[in-house]
Length: 296
Image (cartoon, rainbow, N blue to C red; front, top):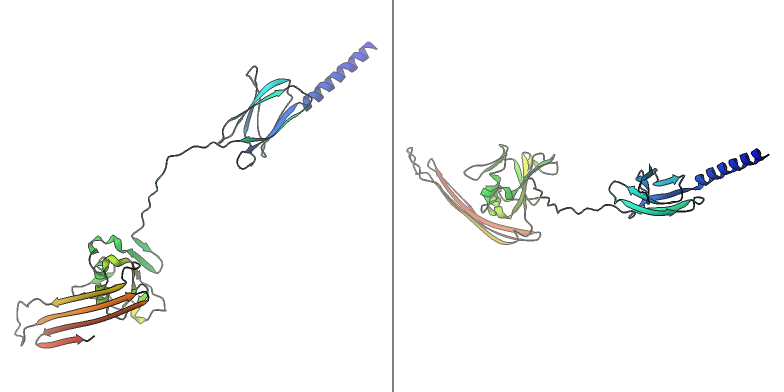
């Protein structure tokens, strides 16, 4: 009879002890202190505060939750580590093994680090190539500064300017000149000599013009884009031409001569662009005299 009572008490103690260990646990959830997002798979280390020895360790689950089970009455320290966050220490006095301890949401503070200032410098390309055109920044042509648009064009590939100021594009004169996207009725050499190189922002060379342009642009289109506000107001341009004396006369009836002059007055304001010009050219070649004059 005594043995039966002792066995019953022993079994009851074992069951009670097992039940107590099952209910003796510490749990919680790790979250970001700024966003409250769960910190999955953070590292936790449980240590005894009195003895300082390691007791248990584990990783939080994918929802940031953790649980230490089978604990005794003691004072504990939980060490929490997570990449990019400050290490957190939690001190716990656990003196009731029959009651679970829920720490609920534990906020972990992100690790902040001040970096030195960084200066990023970008360089704009001088030439931009697209499917239909090439764009040249006028500021890249240092030798043309102080000159005219003609001096700028001399530095652009596929464009040739001869000694007489005649311009060809890819060996052809069949091209169209646009000023800020608008066609001009003035001769190319004349209008280009009136535009200051310093007032040009960029030059667009369109090698495959669309059908909206007339046949004059079959060889291509040169669009000169000026800086805003640079060309408004009055402008006066004049040119003088004179041919050097010929070394040998070749028995001509008259000595070959060539001289001339032109003057242009322009007023531009907003959408208004008014130009008036006068030019005179006299040429005596092989005894024939040619004089041209264009009135205002």
